[in-house]
Image 1 (cartoon, rainbow, N blue to C red):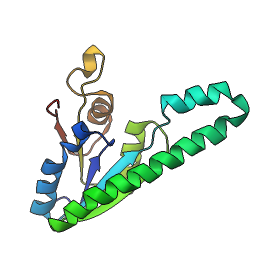
Image 2 (image 1 turned 135 degrees about the vertical axis):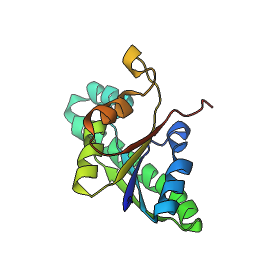
Image 3 (image 1 turned 180 degrees about the horizontal axis):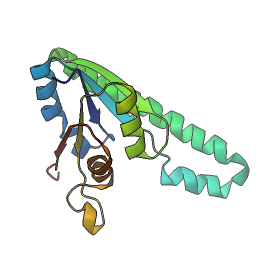
Image 4 (image 1 turned 90 degrees about the vertical axis):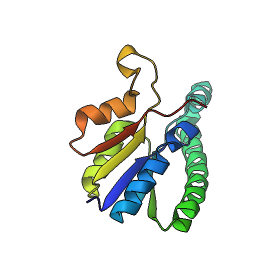
Length: 153
């Protein structure tokens, strides 16, 4: 039913709680599990850049490169576990952009059949149950979504 399943991760253990559900779907449908993370520009890079306006691009690019390397290592660990379970997998890193838009653009351009995401329930009354990215996906995506609210650590 789902040839490709997109799993949205951000490196947190809360986000990873979607994995068992996504893995089960991938096994049931013999799907490719696509792990996706959108690199963010951290606040610290913005602060460092503000202290050295001439080097803004350099500081941000250094931060992005560091995150990309860390994310590749993170994905390698998850992929090894998935391969041991017999799950076909692929990982995707997207450069900084609005996270929800990046996820939907990737899904639309890559024949994704299902998007899986764990919510964080961040601030704001409308986000108490879903979190901003999950809320955006619920409103804007025409694809099936598997959304869970993870258990706090």
